[in-house]
Image (cartoon, rainbow, N blue to C red; front, top):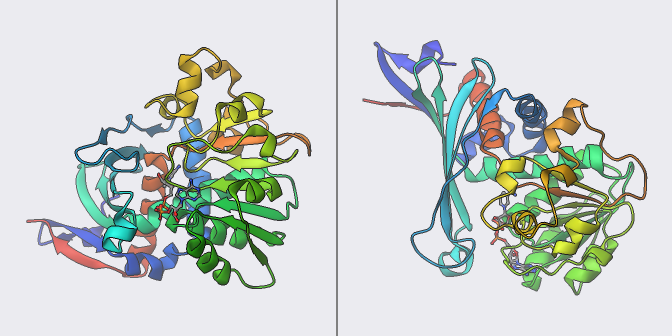
Length: 339
Ligand SMILES: NC(=O)c1ccc[n+]([C@@H]2O[C@H](COP(=O)([O-])OP(=O)(O)OC[C@H]3O[C@@H](n4cnc5c(N)ncnc54)[C@H](O)[C@@H]3O)[C@@H](O)[C@H]2O)c1
Protein backbone atom coordinates (compact mmCIF):
# COMPACT_ATOMS: atom_id res chain seq x y z
CA UNK A 1 0.00 0.00 0.00
CA UNK A 2 3.04 2.32 0.37
CA UNK A 3 2.78 4.76 -2.52
CA UNK A 4 5.67 6.37 -4.41
CA UNK A 5 4.77 9.74 -2.93
CA UNK A 6 5.02 8.67 0.71
CA UNK A 7 8.83 8.73 0.59
CA UNK A 8 11.02 11.85 0.17
CA UNK A 9 14.70 11.26 -0.60
CA UNK A 10 14.36 7.77 0.81
CA UNK A 11 12.92 9.13 4.08
CA UNK A 12 9.47 7.90 5.13
CA UNK A 13 6.63 10.34 5.50
CA UNK A 14 2.96 10.05 6.37
CA UNK A 15 -0.18 11.70 5.03
CA UNK A 16 -2.09 13.60 7.70
CA UNK A 17 -5.83 13.91 7.03
CA UNK A 18 -7.82 16.26 9.25
CA UNK A 19 -11.60 16.07 9.57
CA UNK A 20 -12.02 18.67 6.84
CA UNK A 21 -9.58 16.81 4.53
CA UNK A 22 -11.68 13.67 5.06
CA UNK A 23 -14.91 15.52 4.36
CA UNK A 24 -13.37 16.97 1.17
CA UNK A 25 -13.01 13.47 -0.34
CA UNK A 26 -16.57 12.41 0.50
CA UNK A 27 -16.01 11.36 4.11
CA UNK A 28 -19.08 13.21 5.37
CA UNK A 29 -21.56 11.14 3.36
CA UNK A 30 -22.62 7.52 3.54
CA UNK A 31 -21.61 6.36 0.04
CA UNK A 32 -17.87 6.03 0.76
CA UNK A 33 -18.50 4.05 3.96
CA UNK A 34 -21.24 1.77 2.60
CA UNK A 35 -18.98 0.89 -0.36
CA UNK A 36 -15.92 0.23 1.80
CA UNK A 37 -17.83 -1.76 4.40
CA UNK A 38 -19.78 -3.94 1.97
CA UNK A 39 -16.36 -5.30 0.96
CA UNK A 40 -14.71 -5.17 4.41
CA UNK A 41 -17.49 -7.06 6.22
CA UNK A 42 -17.56 -9.81 3.58
CA UNK A 43 -13.76 -10.18 3.89
CA UNK A 44 -14.23 -10.48 7.64
CA UNK A 45 -16.86 -13.21 7.19
CA UNK A 46 -14.51 -15.05 4.82
CA UNK A 47 -11.71 -15.00 7.38
CA UNK A 48 -9.59 -12.58 5.34
CA UNK A 49 -9.07 -10.11 8.16
CA UNK A 50 -6.98 -10.10 11.31
CA UNK A 51 -8.61 -8.47 14.32
CA UNK A 52 -7.29 -8.99 17.86
CA UNK A 53 -9.75 -8.37 20.70
CA UNK A 54 -9.73 -4.69 21.62
CA UNK A 55 -8.37 -3.67 25.02
CA UNK A 56 -10.25 -1.03 27.05
CA UNK A 57 -8.09 1.43 29.01
CA UNK A 58 -10.08 2.72 31.97
CA UNK A 59 -7.87 5.07 33.96
CA UNK A 60 -10.29 7.71 35.23
CA UNK A 61 -14.04 8.01 35.71
CA UNK A 62 -16.36 5.10 36.44
CA UNK A 63 -19.00 5.87 33.79
CA UNK A 64 -19.40 3.13 31.17
CA UNK A 65 -18.44 5.66 28.45
CA UNK A 66 -15.22 6.86 30.15
CA UNK A 67 -12.43 4.89 28.42
CA UNK A 68 -9.89 4.75 25.63
CA UNK A 69 -10.07 1.75 23.28
CA UNK A 70 -7.30 0.46 21.02
CA UNK A 71 -8.74 -1.16 17.90
CA UNK A 72 -6.19 -2.81 15.57
CA UNK A 73 -6.98 -4.71 12.37
CA UNK A 74 -5.60 -5.90 9.05
CA UNK A 75 -7.93 -5.97 6.04
CA UNK A 76 -7.38 -7.47 2.59
CA UNK A 77 -4.50 -9.15 0.79
CA UNK A 78 -1.88 -7.61 0.83
CA UNK A 79 -4.26 -4.92 2.03
CA UNK A 80 -3.58 -2.53 4.83
CA UNK A 81 -3.14 -2.63 8.59
CA UNK A 82 -4.09 0.00 11.13
CA UNK A 83 -5.25 1.07 14.54
CA UNK A 84 -8.07 3.27 15.77
CA UNK A 85 -7.28 4.81 19.18
CA UNK A 86 -10.58 6.17 20.42
CA UNK A 87 -11.08 8.11 23.65
CA UNK A 88 -14.40 8.87 25.31
CA UNK A 89 -15.66 10.84 28.30
CA UNK A 90 -19.44 10.83 28.73
CA UNK A 91 -19.50 14.43 30.00
CA UNK A 92 -17.26 16.01 27.33
CA UNK A 93 -20.30 17.70 25.65
CA UNK A 94 -21.61 19.49 28.77
CA UNK A 95 -18.32 19.96 30.65
CA UNK A 96 -15.99 20.91 27.80
CA UNK A 97 -18.26 21.66 24.83
CA UNK A 98 -16.51 18.80 23.01
CA UNK A 99 -17.81 15.72 21.27
CA UNK A 100 -17.95 12.72 23.63
CA UNK A 101 -15.54 10.67 21.51
CA UNK A 102 -12.25 11.64 19.90
CA UNK A 103 -10.02 9.43 17.80
CA UNK A 104 -7.05 9.07 15.52
CA UNK A 105 -6.51 6.27 13.03
CA UNK A 106 -3.02 5.16 11.97
CA UNK A 107 -2.68 3.17 8.73
CA UNK A 108 0.37 0.95 8.21
CA UNK A 109 1.81 -0.52 5.01
CA UNK A 110 1.92 -4.31 5.53
CA UNK A 111 5.06 -4.58 3.32
CA UNK A 112 7.15 -2.70 5.89
CA UNK A 113 4.63 -2.18 8.72
CA UNK A 114 5.60 1.52 8.55
CA UNK A 115 2.84 4.06 9.25
CA UNK A 116 1.70 5.72 6.02
CA UNK A 117 -1.22 7.86 7.20
CA UNK A 118 -2.69 9.50 10.27
CA UNK A 119 -6.37 10.40 10.10
CA UNK A 120 -8.76 12.22 12.42
CA UNK A 121 -10.95 9.30 13.54
CA UNK A 122 -14.15 10.75 15.02
CA UNK A 123 -15.82 11.49 11.68
CA UNK A 124 -14.88 8.09 10.22
CA UNK A 125 -16.04 6.35 13.38
CA UNK A 126 -19.48 7.97 13.32
CA UNK A 127 -20.05 7.37 9.60
CA UNK A 128 -18.81 3.78 9.58
CA UNK A 129 -21.16 3.03 12.47
CA UNK A 130 -24.03 4.51 10.47
CA UNK A 131 -22.99 2.56 7.37
CA UNK A 132 -23.18 -0.71 9.34
CA UNK A 133 -26.81 0.12 10.18
CA UNK A 134 -27.49 1.05 6.54
CA UNK A 135 -26.07 -2.24 5.26
CA UNK A 136 -27.98 -4.13 7.95
CA UNK A 137 -31.20 -2.33 6.98
CA UNK A 138 -30.67 -3.35 3.32
CA UNK A 139 -30.79 -7.02 4.30
CA UNK A 140 -32.68 -7.11 7.59
CA UNK A 141 -35.31 -4.32 7.47
CA UNK A 142 -38.73 -4.78 5.84
CA UNK A 143 -38.57 -3.78 2.18
CA UNK A 144 -39.89 -0.24 1.76
CA UNK A 145 -39.96 0.52 5.51
CA UNK A 146 -41.24 4.00 6.27
CA UNK A 147 -40.61 4.81 9.94
CA UNK A 148 -37.22 5.26 11.57
CA UNK A 149 -36.88 5.67 15.36
CA UNK A 150 -33.83 7.10 17.10
CA UNK A 151 -33.25 7.25 20.87
CA UNK A 152 -30.24 9.44 21.75
CA UNK A 153 -29.70 12.32 19.34
CA UNK A 154 -25.97 13.01 19.82
CA UNK A 155 -23.19 12.70 17.25
CA UNK A 156 -23.64 8.99 16.58
CA UNK A 157 -27.45 9.14 16.50
CA UNK A 158 -27.56 12.18 14.20
CA UNK A 159 -25.16 10.51 11.77
CA UNK A 160 -27.31 7.36 11.78
CA UNK A 161 -30.37 9.36 10.78
CA UNK A 162 -28.60 11.34 8.05
CA UNK A 163 -27.00 8.17 6.60
CA UNK A 164 -30.23 6.16 6.66
CA UNK A 165 -32.09 9.04 4.97
CA UNK A 166 -29.36 9.17 2.29
CA UNK A 167 -29.59 5.42 1.70
CA UNK A 168 -33.39 4.87 1.92
CA UNK A 169 -35.53 7.38 0.04
CA UNK A 170 -38.70 5.59 1.17
CA UNK A 171 -38.32 6.73 4.82
CA UNK A 172 -41.31 9.00 5.51
CA UNK A 173 -41.07 9.74 9.24
CA UNK A 174 -38.26 9.91 11.78
CA UNK A 175 -39.28 9.57 15.45
CA UNK A 176 -36.75 11.15 17.82
CA UNK A 177 -36.32 10.94 21.56
CA UNK A 178 -33.55 12.19 23.84
CA UNK A 179 -33.48 12.81 27.60
CA UNK A 180 -32.21 16.22 26.57
CA UNK A 181 -35.23 17.50 24.61
CA UNK A 182 -33.11 20.16 22.90
CA UNK A 183 -30.92 17.49 21.25
CA UNK A 184 -33.99 15.92 19.64
CA UNK A 185 -35.33 19.31 18.53
CA UNK A 186 -32.01 20.34 16.99
CA UNK A 187 -31.84 17.09 14.99
CA UNK A 188 -35.51 17.41 13.96
CA UNK A 189 -34.67 20.79 12.43
CA UNK A 190 -31.97 19.14 10.26
CA UNK A 191 -34.49 16.70 8.76
CA UNK A 192 -35.85 18.21 5.56
CA UNK A 193 -36.73 17.18 1.98
CA UNK A 194 -40.30 16.18 2.80
CA UNK A 195 -39.38 13.75 5.58
CA UNK A 196 -41.47 14.27 8.71
CA UNK A 197 -39.61 14.59 12.04
CA UNK A 198 -41.59 13.80 15.19
CA UNK A 199 -40.11 14.54 18.61
CA UNK A 200 -41.53 11.79 20.83
CA UNK A 201 -42.29 12.36 24.51
CA UNK A 202 -40.77 9.05 25.60
CA UNK A 203 -38.33 6.42 24.39
CA UNK A 204 -41.22 3.97 24.38
CA UNK A 205 -43.31 6.15 22.04
CA UNK A 206 -40.41 6.49 19.60
CA UNK A 207 -39.48 2.79 19.66
CA UNK A 208 -43.10 1.62 19.26
CA UNK A 209 -43.40 3.75 16.11
CA UNK A 210 -40.22 2.51 14.42
CA UNK A 211 -39.80 -0.07 11.65
CA UNK A 212 -36.08 0.47 12.11
CA UNK A 213 -35.11 1.40 15.67
CA UNK A 214 -31.68 2.73 16.61
CA UNK A 215 -30.68 3.45 20.23
CA UNK A 216 -27.59 5.72 20.40
CA UNK A 217 -27.46 6.77 24.06
CA UNK A 218 -24.73 6.52 26.68
CA UNK A 219 -26.86 4.58 29.16
CA UNK A 220 -25.82 1.49 31.07
CA UNK A 221 -29.40 0.81 32.23
CA UNK A 222 -31.59 -1.20 29.86
CA UNK A 223 -34.99 0.35 29.10
CA UNK A 224 -36.20 -1.12 25.76
CA UNK A 225 -38.55 -4.08 26.27
CA UNK A 226 -39.26 -6.73 23.66
CA UNK A 227 -42.99 -5.92 23.57
CA UNK A 228 -42.21 -2.34 22.45
CA UNK A 229 -40.98 -3.71 19.09
CA UNK A 230 -43.42 -3.90 16.18
CA UNK A 231 -43.71 -7.15 14.19
CA UNK A 232 -41.38 -6.76 11.23
CA UNK A 233 -39.03 -4.33 12.95
CA UNK A 234 -35.24 -4.21 12.93
CA UNK A 235 -33.43 -2.97 16.02
CA UNK A 236 -29.85 -1.82 15.41
CA UNK A 237 -28.52 -1.89 18.96
CA UNK A 238 -25.78 0.68 18.40
CA UNK A 239 -25.28 1.75 22.02
CA UNK A 240 -25.43 -1.89 23.15
CA UNK A 241 -26.71 -1.52 26.75
CA UNK A 242 -30.20 -0.11 26.03
CA UNK A 243 -32.14 -3.35 25.56
CA UNK A 244 -33.46 -5.71 28.19
CA UNK A 245 -32.45 -9.34 27.93
CA UNK A 246 -35.93 -10.31 26.70
CA UNK A 247 -35.20 -8.51 23.41
CA UNK A 248 -32.44 -10.99 22.56
CA UNK A 249 -34.48 -13.93 23.82
CA UNK A 250 -37.69 -12.91 22.01
CA UNK A 251 -36.25 -11.83 18.66
CA UNK A 252 -36.67 -14.14 15.68
CA UNK A 253 -33.10 -13.48 14.60
CA UNK A 254 -30.09 -12.10 16.47
CA UNK A 255 -27.24 -10.92 14.26
CA UNK A 256 -23.87 -9.58 15.45
CA UNK A 257 -20.91 -8.05 13.66
CA UNK A 258 -18.50 -10.45 15.38
CA UNK A 259 -19.39 -13.14 17.90
CA UNK A 260 -16.11 -13.01 19.85
CA UNK A 261 -16.33 -9.24 20.26
CA UNK A 262 -20.01 -9.40 21.30
CA UNK A 263 -19.57 -12.14 23.87
CA UNK A 264 -17.29 -10.27 26.29
CA UNK A 265 -16.99 -7.36 28.74
CA UNK A 266 -20.29 -8.26 30.52
CA UNK A 267 -22.31 -6.76 27.65
CA UNK A 268 -25.92 -8.06 27.48
CA UNK A 269 -25.13 -10.97 25.11
CA UNK A 270 -22.21 -11.94 27.33
CA UNK A 271 -24.47 -11.82 30.42
CA UNK A 272 -26.96 -14.11 28.64
CA UNK A 273 -24.23 -16.54 27.66
CA UNK A 274 -22.89 -16.57 31.22
CA UNK A 275 -26.34 -17.38 32.65
CA UNK A 276 -26.85 -20.13 30.06
CA UNK A 277 -29.74 -18.56 28.13
CA UNK A 278 -27.91 -17.67 24.86
CA UNK A 279 -25.14 -19.27 22.83
CA UNK A 280 -23.28 -19.18 19.50
CA UNK A 281 -25.75 -21.83 18.28
CA UNK A 282 -28.72 -19.50 18.92
CA UNK A 283 -27.07 -16.69 16.97
CA UNK A 284 -28.52 -16.34 13.46
CA UNK A 285 -25.39 -14.94 11.77
CA UNK A 286 -22.59 -12.44 11.72
CA UNK A 287 -23.56 -9.54 9.45
CA UNK A 288 -20.75 -10.27 6.95
CA UNK A 289 -22.17 -13.76 6.37
CA UNK A 290 -25.49 -12.18 5.37
CA UNK A 291 -23.77 -9.68 3.05
CA UNK A 292 -21.77 -12.56 1.50
CA UNK A 293 -24.99 -14.52 0.94
CA UNK A 294 -23.92 -17.50 3.03
CA UNK A 295 -26.71 -16.87 5.58
CA UNK A 296 -30.21 -15.49 4.86
CA UNK A 297 -31.28 -11.99 5.84
CA UNK A 298 -34.94 -11.18 6.50
CA UNK A 299 -37.21 -14.00 5.34
CA UNK A 300 -40.69 -12.55 5.99
CA UNK A 301 -42.43 -9.28 6.92
CA UNK A 302 -43.16 -10.28 10.53
CA UNK A 303 -39.76 -11.25 11.86
CA UNK A 304 -38.32 -9.10 14.65
CA UNK A 305 -34.58 -8.90 14.06
CA UNK A 306 -31.89 -7.53 16.38
CA UNK A 307 -28.47 -6.47 15.17
CA UNK A 308 -25.89 -6.11 17.93
CA UNK A 309 -23.04 -4.13 16.34
CA UNK A 310 -20.21 -3.94 18.87
CA UNK A 311 -18.13 -1.94 16.36
CA UNK A 312 -15.09 -3.49 14.76
CA UNK A 313 -11.60 -2.25 13.97
CA UNK A 314 -11.98 -3.93 10.57
CA UNK A 315 -14.71 -1.38 9.80
CA UNK A 316 -12.56 1.58 10.80
CA UNK A 317 -9.51 0.38 8.88
CA UNK A 318 -11.47 -0.57 5.73
CA UNK A 319 -13.11 2.88 5.71
CA UNK A 320 -9.93 4.80 6.59
CA UNK A 321 -8.12 2.95 3.77
CA UNK A 322 -10.78 4.10 1.31
CA UNK A 323 -10.48 7.70 2.57
CA UNK A 324 -6.68 7.46 2.23
CA UNK A 325 -6.94 6.10 -1.34
CA UNK A 326 -9.30 8.91 -2.36
CA UNK A 327 -7.07 11.52 -0.68
CA UNK A 328 -4.00 10.22 -2.56
CA UNK A 329 -5.96 10.37 -5.84
CA UNK A 330 -7.20 13.88 -5.14
CA UNK A 331 -3.94 15.11 -3.58
CA UNK A 332 -5.64 15.97 -0.29
CA UNK A 333 -4.06 16.27 3.16
CA UNK A 334 -0.66 17.30 4.46
CA UNK A 335 2.55 15.27 4.20
CA UNK A 336 4.58 15.00 7.43
CA UNK A 337 8.15 13.72 7.58
CA UNK A 338 8.45 10.82 9.97
CA UNK A 339 12.08 11.52 10.91
N1 LIG B 1 -21.65 0.06 18.18
C1 LIG B 1 -20.79 0.86 17.63
O1 LIG B 1 -20.10 0.53 16.67
C2 LIG B 1 -20.63 2.26 18.18
C3 LIG B 1 -19.76 3.15 17.56
C4 LIG B 1 -19.64 4.45 18.06
C5 LIG B 1 -20.39 4.82 19.17
N2 LIG B 1 -21.22 3.92 19.76
C6 LIG B 1 -22.01 4.29 20.93
O2 LIG B 1 -22.97 5.29 20.56
C7 LIG B 1 -23.39 5.96 21.74
C8 LIG B 1 -23.65 7.43 21.47
O3 LIG B 1 -22.43 8.09 21.22
P1 LIG B 1 -22.40 9.68 20.94
O4 LIG B 1 -21.01 10.00 20.57
O5 LIG B 1 -23.50 10.07 20.04
O6 LIG B 1 -22.69 10.25 22.40
P2 LIG B 1 -23.30 11.69 22.73
O7 LIG B 1 -22.96 11.93 24.14
O8 LIG B 1 -22.90 12.68 21.68
O9 LIG B 1 -24.88 11.47 22.57
C9 LIG B 1 -25.63 10.65 23.42
C10 LIG B 1 -27.04 11.23 23.48
O10 LIG B 1 -27.87 10.29 24.18
C11 LIG B 1 -28.69 11.02 25.09
N3 LIG B 1 -29.04 10.08 26.17
C12 LIG B 1 -28.25 9.62 27.14
N4 LIG B 1 -28.92 8.70 27.88
C13 LIG B 1 -30.15 8.60 27.36
C14 LIG B 1 -31.30 7.81 27.65
N5 LIG B 1 -31.29 6.93 28.65
N6 LIG B 1 -32.40 7.94 26.88
C15 LIG B 1 -32.40 8.84 25.85
N7 LIG B 1 -31.37 9.62 25.50
C16 LIG B 1 -30.24 9.48 26.25
C17 LIG B 1 -27.84 12.19 25.53
O11 LIG B 1 -28.64 13.26 26.01
C18 LIG B 1 -27.11 12.55 24.23
O12 LIG B 1 -27.84 13.49 23.44
C19 LIG B 1 -22.33 5.64 22.81
O13 LIG B 1 -22.87 4.74 23.75
C20 LIG B 1 -21.22 4.96 22.04
O14 LIG B 1 -20.49 4.02 22.80
C21 LIG B 1 -21.36 2.66 19.28
